[in-house]
Length: 408
View: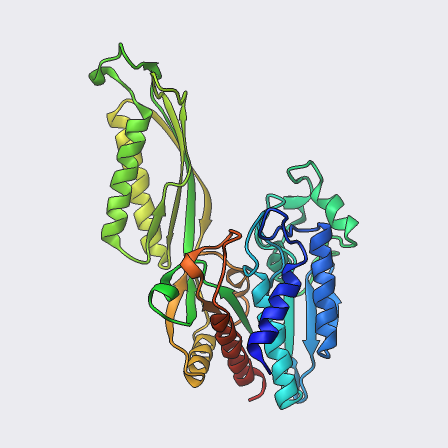
């Protein structure tokens, strides 16, 4: 197989569905381009001899039956949706890698001993509706109808109406989680710059970082910029700046893999000649150790309250996301590492700072991930790219891992 030609053709082909006229890709859940892409992938899976099916909500499956242990399934895949005006590798390349690797194995070695299965998950990004991991949460029977029954997109189109327009619907009643899946392997672009900076081809992911996200509102007192002496001010921007600087300096002292981001800042009244009386800001903190993450953010919350009290301000702290770290399965990590060694890849063991479908699947089935480098660490952007040779090495590593899992 000419891996370079085959991979480039498949990326170009699938990227043409949902290509954004302003550049990049926009393929949102339950849109025409989303449905076209899922049906196109379905046809591609059938072309390599897979039996295909959709589940009730639109997850797509393609299956090669095992000859000896058909009730033991080795699965790979990712999500088909994109962010608005995103890149052409996030999500969909994991699907491409899965079916190309499985097609190659079938062509080279024949029918696997264990069943091989591709999953093209309906949604992960949360870009159209205020819900995330709709595909993998349904796959794990963790999705809740009540969480989406009343939500709508930015055009006012209801989630339920969009889903049914595409021919899908909610699952009927409680369903038992599948017992046949023995391993899940997801290939993904890194979406960071560690591999590129270290000159490596493959990341073997052994954990996905936990996340805590906050919205904080500091309320001081808006006042005249010229007539209010510095000692009498309740300047909310100054209070925020103290919190931000102290927090980031402390995070640097803790060191990797802790990351802390103050990503959104909205001062009020936000004008040149008024002391700002209120600031809304967000906090995003991540670490692979749940206890350390909890301890660090707990101390940060205490310091925010202390600074507010010192400056005579009110503060509200809303912790609206609290996701625990998710370890990957040690045995599957070892299989991928050995596959990388066998293919003479330059690799490292690493964690993922971003969330992925694998974090939903890992608590239930043995799971691990393969990363390939992102040029400049850029993702969720039309400039998202990976060198073709790195994409090739990623698929080769995937094929080698799947061979160990399904053919031995």
